[in-house]
Length: 401
Image (cartoon, rainbow, N blue to C red; front, side, top):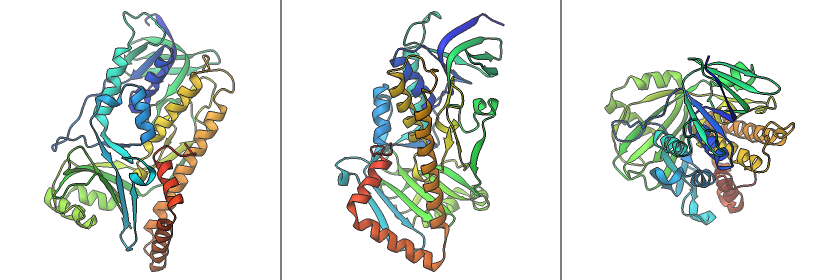
């Protein structure tokens, strides 16, 4: 085993949430070690866009700007949202101008966004292995062993490198190794849906609008990219339908998705590779289970993609960490994370329950339920104050954030 290396904070997981946490703590003067299996690379599909795109709220965009990430990515602002359902005539529309903004959010390709974060981390990387306040050390490889004691967090890598930390932040995703090692129970919602994710070229421009249609089998979202005629698609549906659609020819699939969107953007001219993604909703009761460990992002909770809030919740986690760390040098101080954990638990629980209710309401194709939905949408559209508050919450600018 090689000599022990000591650092203040370990961040396990180098996705967007993890690298943002590392950058945020380094900016506050902490010595951080970022641990990830391999360095990310930019990925592009046949149509020139990453198949994985994320919606970034104004609050998240402000945080990424402070961390030096935002200016190095190409984004597509959207200023409108159009939402309607399969069995009703009522339609919801949201416009950024109604809340005094020019955009509701941005769509950004995931891999370039993560790579931009890593470029920033490389700029504050430790030089010659010397510990300096505000440095980031990047360690690539697989973790062989992890142990948490009252005094330290010890990590051994495959190959023998041994590290000791004062504090550990786990941002290692929905299948978190840290969560499993600590044997932390999950509250899970069984789902019978998967999602097909892809990119399509449309006849008409996307009009800087996020389009979402609630189908009985699951919601279909068309999200704008930097190209006026390219949309990122996330189509939630039953596994049976998804497996069937994954086997369709490109032309037949284009026809099905065009009809599902009621041809709002004209003909679907071409489609990129299709990915089938499992869907789940799960959360921890306590994201700070011991004094030296904090779980964030998808390691803390996973939500349905229909609201596009997964990454934004993770970046909210990071913003909360930075707020506490700005005034507390000892991140393992007893009770430091109690209120933070309670607030994040409440936020996660509220989001999961809301999305579950929304899915169940729109999955019910009974005529009476369809009538009630349309009446409810009409009622909602009449109350600008309520509608604007919902918009602010979705943008990360409301009281619940």
